Image 1 (cartoon, rainbow over the protein chains, first blue to last red):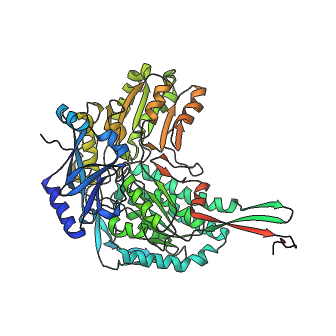
Image 2 (spheres, chains in turn blue, red):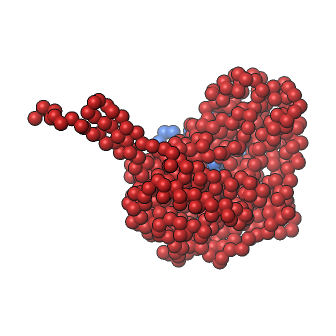
Length: 119
Length: 499
């Protein structure tokens, strides 16, 4: 059986595909704390310097989803679903001019998922 | 006593070169009040061309401004303070409308503190001096501080006018010209300030650009005509801004997130007195500004032998928080700043519950009636759990506190420092040794000792670890906006003798 760390809602997937059509190759990066933080941000692929400290959690609509390894330590037992909601953010995430924002719904992994993904 | 929503113009442009101008592309965005989700006004949706115009205006003004006397610049900073003070109520009302916070906070904290920061930096540049060292009988080393030139500043939405007043005065006092971008959720008090002080500074010295991060923020942060970028916000955007700055080899200062521990040792309950009352309020300060503070004391750590008794009083005090019309002076906690914040906070409360945290207070949205039914209100929430839970590790930026107990000093420090961040911390004790030793062992830039959430000018504020670097609200910030010109002067008439 295949287990995944990240998933995406249909509504959010539609926005990701619109952004891909407009901007080309993209990545998601899960931001850390403060004002507009703890949110998934989407950037043009070349915009952000990634290295081995960024953990690849999976791909959504062909867009890789990364998180910094320090943060991953605390998040690794949770499943993330990317959704979209009305709102404004002051980050550089590409959906913001559309008057919407990506957000995360989380749930704790089942024992089975946890064994498969983290052990 | 209650105020009501202030009135606004239909739309506001950018403030560039001393006047309000339409954005080059002609586009505006709508800005709503989180109090009732009604329209405030439209603000300029800027693009790279607008940023270019602001940088050009700043560039044209910089040389003359950088050569003004400290006395002159100080006088202008004081003038700004006087103007805000004369209009304090208007600024407070507009801030409450735009951000959602309770009017008693804007009247008594945001605006008065903003005024004082302008005055503080006006005073700083009158009192400080350069330095000169006689290296030997004929050689003098003289250090003169010079402005960097053009500074870009990007500020958040949680304390709109106060964050502006942390950033603009030191940069201007140092002789720089500034392009400041307010957060798009809260463009109103920056705009009101420009209306009031339009004539104070020469055109081009202060410029305000509105708009969205990817469209206006990024071109500003990456602009080759800018000499420094100062940012307050979250970590991923911080990393991006540092990348852009690296292309221009520009210095940056960053004030990023936090997950601040607020530690209560058992001696706080030795007496049932004014100090205990203060300590309980200190724990409940997680709800200050709806929890939308980088230094929100979002982890309460209580020594186990007083845990039950202490938390009983904290819970009771939290439940007594009056959530009502934010324009009412009796309102103690207003609206979250936006819908996405609201959604995010509720999703964190859910994950806290899923992870097994126990809800001691709140745990739900707060439904207000009538015109406020469409606003974004959340009950102050206390979650009991352990430090490895996500609600203990991630900045929720809402009125949600995670509480746990500790055995002794060693365990308190272990939990306090087990975080990616190091912005603030609180230590509460009657023990004279702990008063010094515990704050010294906490890896954070600001440790409040027997107090919390005080932000006076003249005390440096900034982060350790992933909370950033740079020290604001203090003379130290001046050197983040300047460079040092060293003149090495020889008074020796004789040649070296090499050639």
